[in-house]
Image 1 (tube, rainbow, N blue to C red):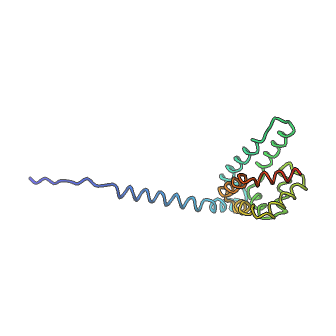
Image 2 (spheres, one colour; image 1 turned 90 degrees about the vertical axis):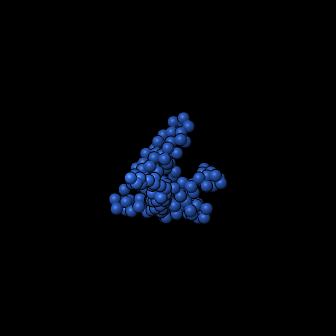
Length: 167
């Protein structure tokens, strides 16, 4: 009788194809995530998407972290947090492209006076170092907006903007 030896099949090729497919799908997901999110927001009539709510929750946490125990200050922080939660991200995105709408949104959603809101909006729209941040917010690209904010925080621009308000 003749014995036949079966060779063990190598699964390397299948594993490599699976890994490559997985990475390609991940890259496509990352590249098209923000446009898809914006499309869902548009279809829903400007209502917040799940990722919008996540971004807003992080913004609220950042605002809430400024509490300092002073009852008046903490009351303003609570008010700003509540207003931020109730503001649609589509409205915030529109504000990033229009100085007067930005000033109005700031005034309605923060403790800033109308004059201070206009001053901040004028500064943000007139200084080119804020252009990338405004573009990212306007496009709904929250990851890029976060990176721009972090960069502006690190170079002192955000602190400089805050200090210009209190003058």
